[in-house]
Length: 262
Image (cartoon, rainbow, N blue to C red; front, side, top):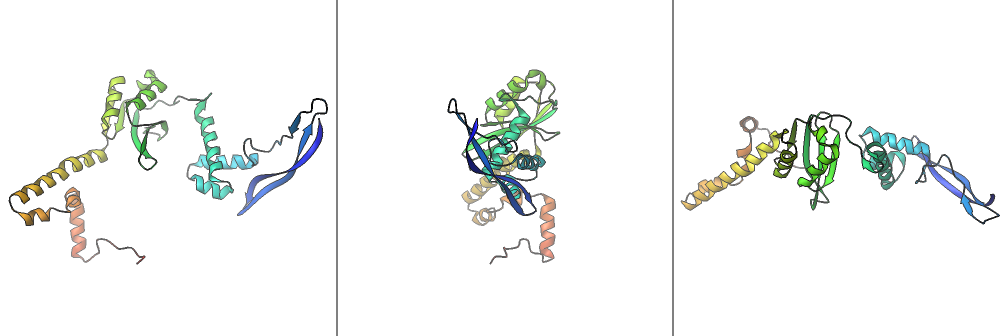
C-alpha cells in the first residue's frame, strides 16, 4: 500500500503539573493501487475508542481505581470530559467483573449480606444492591425493589454459595425477607437498629401523639391539645439529648445558629 494522504491528528496526553498537554502529528492514509482499498495508519500509543494516549488512559484508570475521586474530579485532573471518564470507568469495571458479557460470580464466600434499595432519577424509579457486610463489596445491583431482584441474585451465585450465608440485614422490606425465606430458609433475617427505631417512631409514637391530640380536642382540652403540636421530635429524642439541651439552654448557649448569609 502507498501513502495517499496525510491528515493532522491530536491526542490528549499526560498533564505536566497544572498544564494539559496533547500530541500533534500527521496520520497517513494508505491506498492499495490494485484494489483501491484505503486504510488509515494505526497508532500504537493511541487508546482504542478515544482520542487520548495509552498513558493517559492508564493514568485515568488508576485514579478511578483509588475510589476516592468522582467523575468530575478525575475529569479536572486529567483534562478529559466527564462522559469520557465515565466510559473509561465502565470499561474498567466490565473487565474486572464480567466475562463474555456475564457477571462473574463472587470469589469470596460471604457470611453476612445486606440488601437495600435506593432512589433513581429523583425517586421515580428504584434500584436494589446487595453487599458483603464484612468487606463492603457490592455483589449485585439491579433495577426494582421486589422479590425478583433476590431471585435473580440467588440464581446468579447458586444455592451452594448461598448455603454459606448465615444472615441478611434489611430495612424491614417484607418482599426481601420473604424472598430469602422462600429460597434459603436457613438464612436468619436481621433488621438494623436504625430502621427498627424509625419504624417505631413513625407507626407508634407519632400515631399515639395524634390520637391523644384528637382525644383532647374532643373533650374540650384545647390548650393541652395545642401543647402537643410540633412535639414530634421532642418525644422521639432520647432522655440524654433532652437533658443536654436543657443544660445548654440554662447556661445561655444558643440551641441553633442562623445562616451567616443574611
